[in-house]
Amino acid sequence: MLETSIIIRTKNEEQWIRINLEKLFCQTYKNFEIIVIDSGSTDRTLEIVRKFSVKIFEIPFEKFSYPYALNFGIEKSSALKYIVIISAHSLPISDTWLQDGLNNFKNHQNIMGVYGYVKALPGSSIWDKLFLDWTGFFRRVITLNKLKSHLVESGRMGVMGFTNAIILKDLWNRRKFNEAYGMRGEDGEWADYWFSKGYKAIRDANFTVRHSHNLSLYG
Image (cartoon, rainbow, N blue to C red; front, side, top):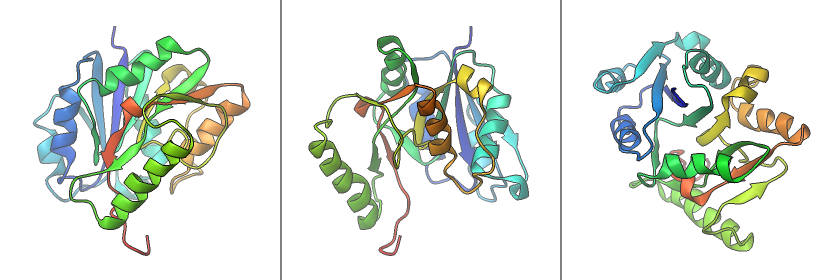
């Protein structure tokens, strides 16, 4: 039984996609497929991706939106239980990253999903490091959640962010991502819906990724 599908959205991701896929295929947990949804890459992204055992689907750039690409990918998935969403330029912090994230579903009841912290990629701008590493560090110290998972019971900025998240496929089948949120925000809107139904989320430090927003000072 295929348990998990990993969905990756790509467009011109040649810089990090090889390392991303290598880290995913090195995970200790193996019961997954990877689905790549590409929306018009013009660099070497697809050339690189085709060297891995993944499913590739291409959509026209004109049809792309964040929730549409995710809904499209999940509709193509074969997994029965879990959907993992990870950015193409996000790198898991360990080989047990996926198993650590999935363990939360065994250890907690009535949760919609799991998400992690985000740290800056090597070589990221000083602004990425300031925003992702330093502000994240102080938030974790202030909330006393620096090195552990914790329960989240209501929505706020960044909750269940689809940079790195796991959701239950059954909940997605019952309510897909709202495609009115085409320019992002679909993750928070979806989470808020399930919070309103009494579900909770887990934020797990072991499910952290390294990521970049390519921030400038203005950004």
